[in-house]
Length: 234
Image 1 (tube, helix red, strand yellow):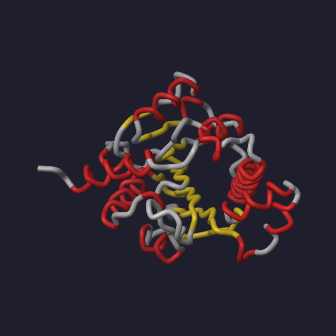
Image 2: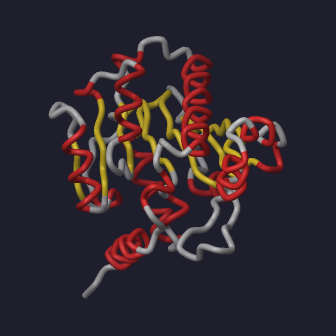
């Protein structure tokens, strides 16, 4: 008998296989590097606001680590390899992450909602555009609950994802703030709207990359949220 989480895991793999050319997400594209740098700046400001001036002692795990790009960012910020970990569903992306990340970074290949990670063992649990790829509400809820158990008191879930639907892509759906609150009802939520709508960003950057920051000053054109969902400290 096939379990529901197995059905959704298989569907996610099929949706990723239908995605566009990889060069659309290459850092050589001006819309992509501006999006990434904007998110990095917002994340650094968040760490400073939290008073996290001790990043080498912080423990973090990423759900859906892909080819390892976000974990490499955390390493550059000062996290230690042995304090990082990643989980990736797709075998080919897992293999890429394993090639580029230090051996001291533990990686698991499979469904994160079924992994047995020690409870309250992580200061930071990161997800970046994972939940928008999950179309099953029950699967979303199970994964969110599992992630929440990993968070140590005073730590949190660092969330980056888009909030609005893409009418041209039925393989994803936006995750609005109301849904984020429902997924993590016991969290204290802080959020910031960032990221110029990618279709618009690509169009503008074909004209000139300098148009990205100009149009990104208009909040209605930002489609993503960087959120911090903090677990109360005792």
